[in-house]
Image (cartoon, rainbow, N blue to C red; front, top):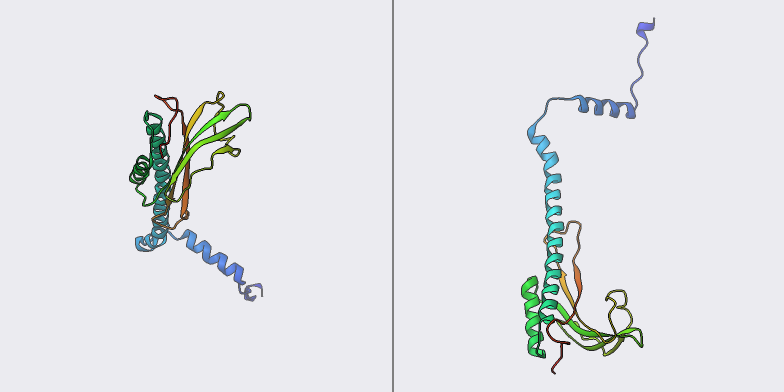
Length: 192
């Protein structure tokens, strides 16, 4: 009589578990099915890798361009003017391969009596204006300690990054803040 007892039908969880077990144990394969399953993942991974490396490359290029301009200005022995700064702005666009980069060049000095950095002159291009002459409080953590009345050339750049593929990284501006001491002259002067 025990042989005639009907077995209960499996519930939905048991049926799904049995199908998953059969799928896991299946050893016959079709390359087309496996390719169709893995190819989208590989394609996405390749595009994401390309996007991230392109962002790091652009960031590196922008930083190197800012350092190049700061070094160029630090070696200048003559006064600079609007023509010089306009050409420097064009150079920044050429080095970073961007259409309208932002550039600001400022000369600052340390005033020990006021315990602050002061702007001597500042000029900007590409939509970034110059700073007003006078003290700047928010650069204390960005500039080095200096002797009294020592001067620095500060170069700020901004380039817009637009990724080729919208996978993981959005459009954003890449800012650089670089400073250098004048090398061959005691200071860099602006001739208006």
